[in-house]
Length: 259
Image (cartoon, rainbow, N blue to C red; front, side):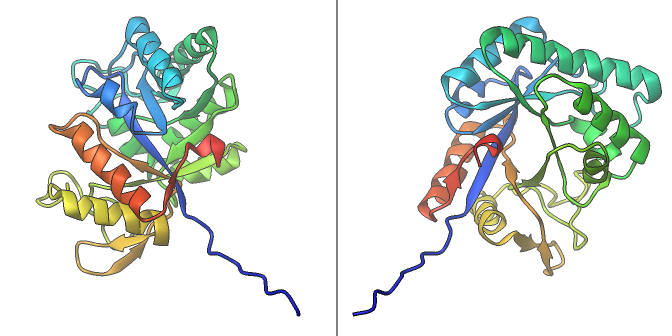
């Protein structure tokens, strides 16, 4: 009798990341939920003490260690657009990423990725010069880290130009425009406050690479990692709910370095 080979559908795999080491009170809980940590490294927030503490906790929880550099604007938490550029930005980002990489190495971890923070991230989505500066810093960083950012933007173009691994990021609690960009936080409905909406979006992004834009259109969004914001009230509970829903749908949560 001829044997019949049964082929099961491939299990969806996704990375969950959070921005940590920024002084928010939920880091310890989030590091038990996420698979990748983006650790503030002295620009918008963080210092050597907070970096070391967060790296130690990440290692203890089996979480990939990444750098989260931003504009050197501690008063404004790195949220002022156009705060720095050119050589000054390059030198600042190099110092931030190197500081975290050195601390991680001392504690036995490799720098797995770099994700720019706040206004720098948003500015560089469309600004080739800024994206190239970030990519150059990452290319020169120890450990051959990947570049984490939004797909189809100058971030990805610069990563490709510099021969970097690119980790495409999507957001579980942000509304999308039809072109795949995020709705501005200045507009109502930009952030999904309803947990059910966020968990549903997380599953669709992980399984189908799509979500529904605010005008009702289906929009394709490539996602290797999903961002869970860790600086909002109830952040840990929301993150746990997202992970639980994803796993209930058979989605494997795994750091991008392990995929």
